[in-house]
Length: 192
Image 1: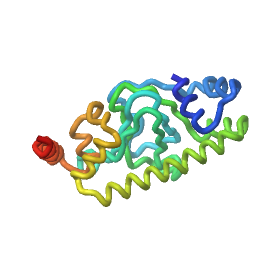
Image 2 (image 1 turned 180 degrees about the horizontal axis):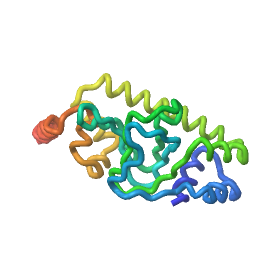
Image 3 (image 1 turned 180 degrees about the vertical axis):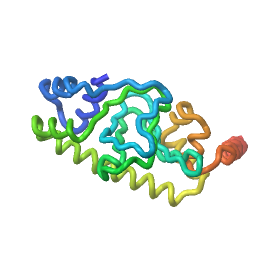
Image 4 (image 1 turned 30 degrees about the vertical axis):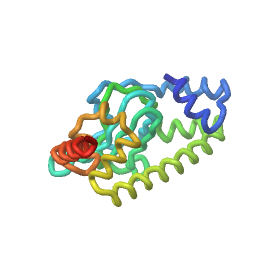
């Protein structure tokens, strides 16, 4: 599994064998079963995640209803806001599928940054890319109709349709499952 991580990092910088060994020695690769909740509302956590295999979902529970905000699949990373604020989480993180995840925290980062200073630059670049990606995703969500959101999902992340339950997809797209079904049926009719 670590090979996938090393390939991802290699897109930004080549890794030395010493660096690869240091990453492996941290024992930060964890397996989780489908349905495992990694973080609950009200819990405090310092853990961030990098998905090697599987799918994680973030969501809020508002008036008893789950509101999905994101899905993280292979080579996606996520750090809950509670890492920065040091306040209890307002969201949940759970595994949609059996998942292999790199679990990281600020203490591990400090160890690696001291030993390999160039990792700090890598983390900064990845953070900047993530912020830009999240802003673009947010802007797209706010400026598009439900139908446009669904079509965009089909174009950019079609694999989610096979991997994620429809009610979670609907929530992610900002609609009820019935609305998503109607949009899908209309698109089928239009395609004929």
